[in-house]
Image 1 (cartoon, rainbow, N blue to C red):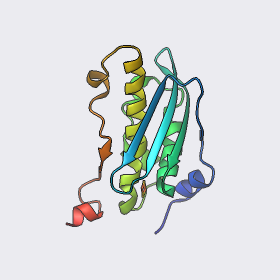
Image 2: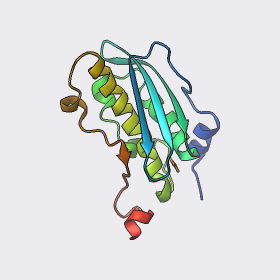
Image 3: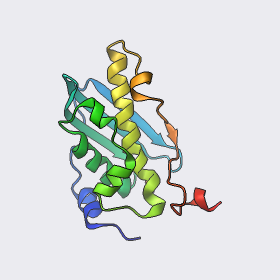
Image 4: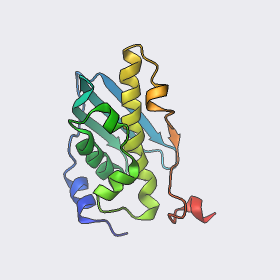
Length: 151
Ligand code: FES
C-alpha cells in the first residue's frame, strides 16, 4: 500500500495529540467497519475553535487524517469547521489508498460530534446546526474500490 509523504509525516508526527482539560465540546466516534475509535476535544471561544486535541485508537490513516483535520479547523469559526469534509482532509494529505478512505470519516464525524456536544451543553439543539451525526458509519465514495463498492 502506498501512502503519500504527507500521510507518513502526519502519522509519524501527529499534531494536536492529547486531551484538553478545559474542553467545552467533546466528541467520540467509532468506525463500524474496523472498530477503531477517535475522540476529539474542542476549546471553543466566541464561536472560534481556540484549541483542539485528539486521541485516536486506530490505524495510521486514521491518525494522519485526525492530525490533518485538527490542523485544518484550529483557529477557524465553527461554521467553517462544520463544512470540513473527509474528502478535503484526504486532499490535504495528497490522497489515501481507496481502502483507507473510510478511515478519514472518523475525524470529520468526531469534529461534528464535538461541536454538537458544545451546543448541547449550551442548551441548544444541535441537530439543525450540525445535522445528524453518523456514529456508526461507513462512508465511502462510490466507485472508490473498497469492499463495499465491489459487492
Ligand atoms: Fe480503522 Fe483505519 S482501519 S480507521
